[in-house]
Length: 421
Image 1: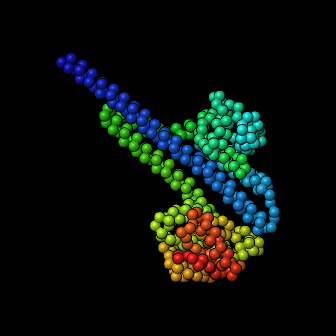
Image 2: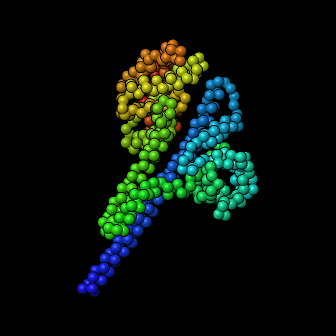
Image 3: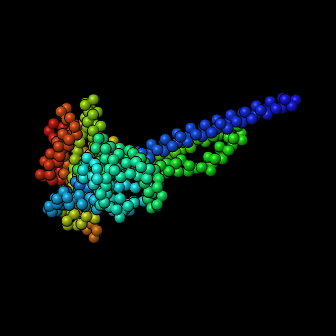
């Protein structure tokens, strides 16, 4: 009887030990999977952020040049660069990053490396060291050469991910950072964003108390504990995955939407036009590309101020959206210039649609800041893809020319003669 009891006890202990080891293996595998998922999300997040900054620099350059051209005020490339640097410094300084991430810029002077190969241009964590010279021989807290790694990476590939040890934002502690760097060659800027690796772990253990409780249940309840731990880990994984996907969707929405008018952004429009051109070459199903701008918009701004100009832009977009189909796409291309993508539309329907768009803006009244009502008109040009369009640049030049013809008259539209032929 005693031997049977001992055998039963031994078997029970073995089962419990097996369950304990299995639970630990499952938890280790789950934690690793969650960590890899969280790390992938953080990589995508910082890459999206830096790439969006590069995109915004190009937009800022275009807007500054266009503004000064409209004001007939000559401006040099160096002055534009200084303005953009000032804007970025203000944005980086004011940015709130609870997870310890921040963005900085180094300016390359010598791509061969060595002493004084670059200078620290903007760094919100080390503001008092901005403008100091950098060397590829500089080491981090662990003896690595992050500046050498960064320079070689952007010189060979234009961008890279790498790790280094650096002090935390707002603290004197040093931690390992995940960083993404991308070269902006026009200004010789290396734009970087870093985030501590411990922030990745903190995201995983947001619900650590419940997680430990379930693991304890696994130890005590044997196979039931394993099942409970597995189910919880799966639930936690999908919840984390959903949160990451939601954040990525929010980031994508910011990139794809114009903040002032809520029309689609130029970034979104460029990608969409490329997709449609590829589809046209594959299927020969054509699409109308219309471009319009607001007549005498500079005069509107000069006479009534930019606040009223913003009102005109927003209300124009609202009126256009109310007079196009659900499948049509409205894009703010820049300033007061917009593009409308009109799929599956005949030449006759196109003429009626463009007349409707001219009329809806012509009949709308815009109230300025003093309450006085103003009338605004738009000019529209239209074309479609052609078989010899090897890129959207060719299509855009053609629709821009159509808009130019319409603007000779104003408050009307012009359709390129070969549209839908």
